[in-house]
Image (cartoon, one colour):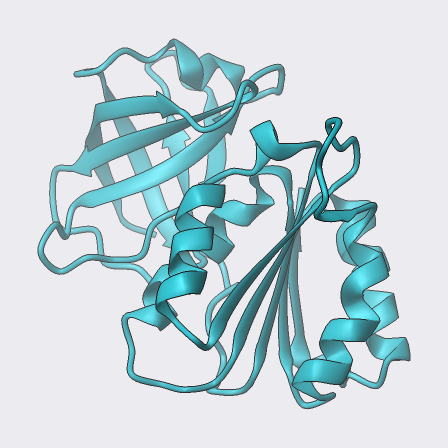
Length: 226
């Protein structure tokens, strides 16, 4: 994998527990949506992050990641704007496979590579449906929720389905685990769909098994977990 340096040019909270960080690479950073990079800090520690933004030809060196507080990656949050890190990548195979109905399922910061996939696909003129099912704690933890809702209003083929495990009072949307909504989405999209899963390993494993039970071929299920 190639290596290059990148400067932290912006950071902003995505939720009370997650910070979005934007880097500017020292050279054009070409990648496929869904891939990841490894960031190395000055003291030598390394952290892998899925890239949360699609490649943009008008800003070929810019990329985004999402960093959760209270995890092993917390040292990355100590970076200040203007700091420079070493980056290796891209790598990974959680990329768009074919123009078939797409079911994207994520929990937590696992939504990062799926956001890049959504951005990449909605830039195209294809008409295949894309559904994003996202499990999180509550409204405050809907990472990029406003953006996804806006994209759903702008693009007929895209729909965003957040589901909350600990809904706040007055919430009227979907609740519970993402697994509960797979049968409905498979019925809508058909068993020839392509599924892209990212999040904690138990969720990815459960969803993979459920999709097989629902008739989705194993070759059509693509997952990445942490």
